[in-house]
Length: 262
Image 1: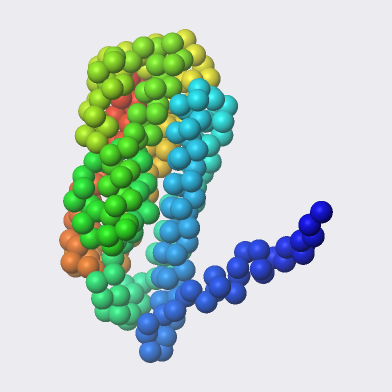
Image 2: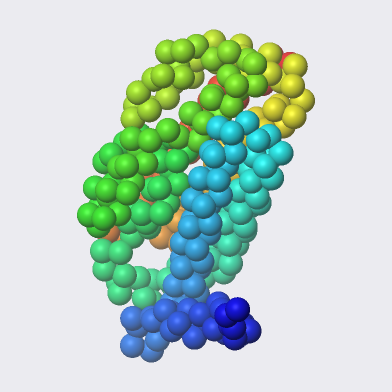
């Protein structure tokens, strides 16, 4: 029998290490730089959790485990709501307060968030250009996910296994290529909604997630516009203009297309 010292809160959560990771670059430092760092580090923690939950959700869907899939997708929806809510905190910082330390960011940019690119890849984004600004190891990880089945591919497998046939050419498609909305898939989804209430709830959770991601993108755009206006973003990005171009592109277009069928 081995003995193990009782876990201490500070040691278990690595609190000392965690609190040492906020290192403002301003000479002052500028008061608001700490907030900026904490918010973005918190986002990275939530992205890590989202990747963890999405991976488990894909496994549950492919195993036909409806109840577990519902629980995991519901948790993902709630995490996305938390990510949106954090923007309220960031917007308490005025443009002048941000500008006081903005130049210290150098080439650092949210476009370099490898974990957010992983989330996008899991959700089906297939554009290797977004991996270009990343560090080599991060780029490999994102590109590997872009060559792997997305969450939607797992959903299609689930729908088919629930007895609502998906065309073989869709199930066996090249998953490294972008998915395009498909009428036959939409017919299967309509039949599923009418014939399997539990599986239909899985689809509704996916719509919640899609809507949550679109809400996060919209709030992100407005926050950037509010803070830097039409200025170029850090790292050479086009700032709000690029972010605006990502709006209103649903992740699961088939689930939106069938709304008028009921």
